[in-house]
Image (tube, rainbow, N blue to C red):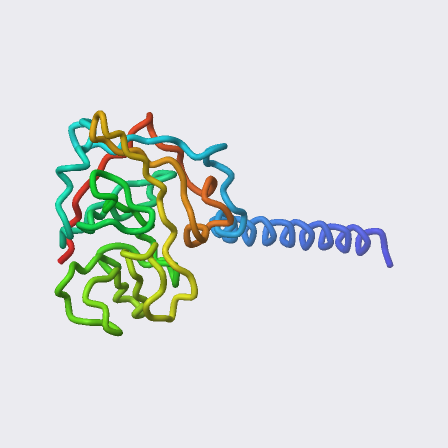
Amino acid sequence: MSKKENEIDLSRRKFLKMVSIGSAVVALGAFAPSLSYIVAPTIGVSEFPALTLVDSSGNPIKASTIAVNNPQIVLFDYPLLNEPNFLLNLGKSVPGGVGPQNSIVAYSAICEHLGCLPPSIKFYPPGSPPIDGYTSYIHCSCHGSTFDPFNRCSIITSPTTKPQPMVVLTYDSSTDTLQAVKMNGPVIYGHTDDLTGGSPPKGNTAPVTTLNNQ
């Protein structure tokens, strides 16, 4: 091979190498947005926060004023932001219930089957069309999973294989106020644990909101 041919061959190799590197960079750049779904986010909290439930004005919710079997979707985020939970007053003493009648409970509003959110999953008050003999339940219209809010959100109908996680509430009878202090039951859908995977709460309160459930 002549000197000139050798120089041409070397130049061609350098060019092909640069093209290969450039292609790899482009491919990695296209893949990068999906990395966040593969590598679990580390942001979170080191322990369960104690958050006082408050209204939109920042005033503590009075337990005795929470409507019984309210058909509206009432939510608050816990233990991290963007992790909604149902707040329910079931009107009678139930397992895990707090408040003046031990009737107030809170459950994750992220369906344990495939993660559907309100209003696809919502609470149906007593007198609703029966499902497996139950006339009050939490039902997810995405795929038909149904839960019993009167018994720690245990499973009524599949396809879910897990009950809804329960928020542990504490009640201060001297102030008639509520705090969310922990999660019980299975881990919140899509998480390896309840303390990572989202943004920490802001301050020491959890605002309660009402969602249009139509």
